[in-house]
Length: 375
Image (cartoon, rainbow, N blue to C red; front, side, top):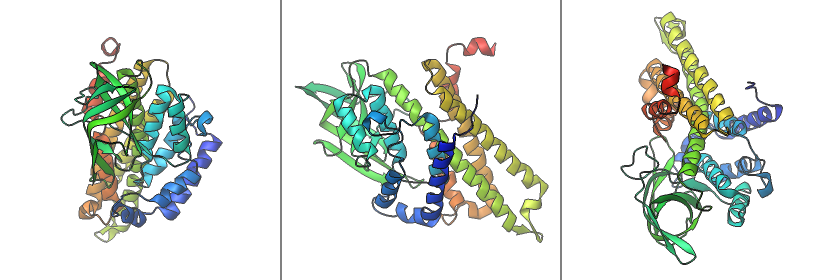
């Protein structure tokens, strides 16, 4: 299987990297994090001009029909620069609309507005006390005339307050159904806050909040799991970029920090540790590329297996590289003045978002055929 990027994908990666290197340095990023909104309208506009918001959108709705590998290219660069704009959340929302039916008039109009940069989306994956169970849903939906009303609470909705529309799962007559809720709908309370990695999240409380059902009766639990797999894959791609940046920063730091009159990069024991960091990074990259190839598989089990394998291996790599980077930086590795500390924080959050290493190892082991293969 050829995992080399196409010429167009490499050009996109190069253009995005040049923009981020020039306009989204660490100090610029920190200034954005400290603003009340926590994101930058100017940078979002630049992402629109670069075609990032249109990339995952179908061509019929004004997009570029971006493949998982196209999205992997983008997420790697965003992860490397620790971008805090709500691109991941919006891309996940786009996938939800596509899986439900992109040609449905309301979905199509929403996708067109996403492509043009006028609308941002977010998916409400978590509920209080649900941990990693996507289907532990206390939020309920009731039919009200031609529409629906939601009641319940969603927690840690990444960029929930920055989104114009939310994709929300809820129980409807005992089954899982998906809904689209507008940010300005009545009966909704939003509590926005900053997370430890500089991103934004929100708690959403619905009280008979009007909602539109996303798709027909066939769009339910399996679709929600499919959406979560896509979100997980994008997180793995972002983590690769952050791991690369953290590894590079650590190597450069050891070239400048001196002990006994020489740079510590000359110490063989530390060289071995940095080599191990690189090995973890490359293994995480390879399995994430495999997940990109398998995400669109006709077999849902094949998709689940590849996504969980990637999330588990990326989580292991993120933890190892982060811990080694902090140790090799010494006390500086945990200060807010260095990007390394923030990269480690972001990797730690990614590792625990939508299932940690243990969760995905258990999910992988539960796949059909695992016991037979292991035997």
